[in-house]
Image (cartoon, rainbow, N blue to C red; front, side, top):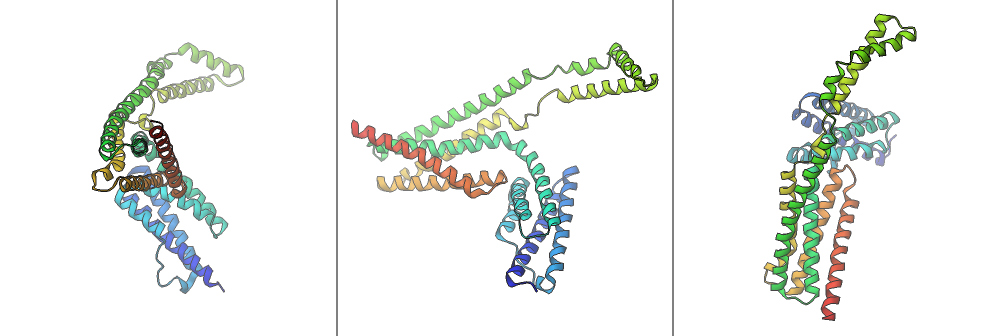
Length: 346
């Protein structure tokens, strides 16, 4: 007889498998071609796992259990923001399922599912990598650098008016600098890769290397291969070489991103992030309250953005969020200390 604890765990597994099957099926309806087929297969596999838990639970499977919050959140993100969020969360979820209290066969299934989802998510991560990198760096630079600037100016003895002026100046200067820097960085990287591309005419030349083909065929004939077979082998090798040359021409620039998109993304997100610590200084509060509110708002924003990065990387969001929070506030704290020391000396 199963214990109450086991039944509770099995019902949670059943609810998760049902929700994940429904989510994969929903994503499959939004996709085409090979990716759609893969998602349909994943949904079918989750339904097989659902049946496993139904058989194991028997009457304890009723009434239908409510899916865990994590699984429900995954489904909601899929419908609201698109498949990249849900695939990243599903990658982490499948990895956790593989280590749960389940049969060896199902654990193996979940590990395979995790790799399948990792590959699907990888395609979309590559497509958004350039713009996403610029957005994340821009937002975090805006949050941290402008909070550090504001705290440093406050530490040096400036009043609310001076802090507001410094904060708005830092916002504009930083956003323009970030946008210009991202554009130059992306364009320069593209130009360097283009300079390293193989000559596209190399593939065309391979087809005309008759002498090389004849000599290659002689190699096989010397090894005892009949003349007709030797010629066929030589031609096949040259065809493969031609195809390989064609495949090598050009780079996949998805991971680099588009220069203008990266620049606009970096500009907009830096400005947004930099405005967060400035906003409290527009309110009729005391200087201390303005500083405290600015620090609290930046801390919340850093924690949220770190969590989002964790989700999209298919990892636990908590440690990433905490890391981003500590690094950001640490940098701002150092600047405040330097500003305070400078104000004391002057």
